[in-house]
Length: 118
Image (cartoon, rainbow, N blue to C red; front, side, top):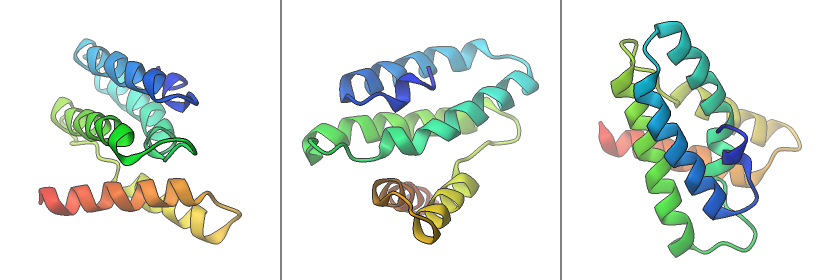
C-alpha cells in the first residue's frame, strides 16, 4: 500500500488511502503499528505532493483523505503517532538539498492542518 501512495495518478493514490484505512484496524500489536506507520510516513509526503497535471479540486479530496488517515493513526496507537517530526525532516531536506518544492509544500500543508486542529 505504501508503494501505491507513490503512484503517478490520483486515482491510485486514493485507492492506497482506502487500503491503509482498512489495514489500520487489523494491526493489533504495537510493533506492527509502528512498523506500518513508518512505511506510511515515508510515502505520505509523496502522496500529498501536487502532480504536474493536477488542480486544486482534484487534490483536495486526496489531501483530505490523507489527513483523515493520518488522524486515524493517532487514534489507533497508544503512543499517538503523528507525522509532525517527519514533516520537519521533509521540509528541511527540501530546503537544504536539491529538494522537491512539492514535498516542501506538502509538509507546510500538513503542519498547517495540525495547527488548525490544536
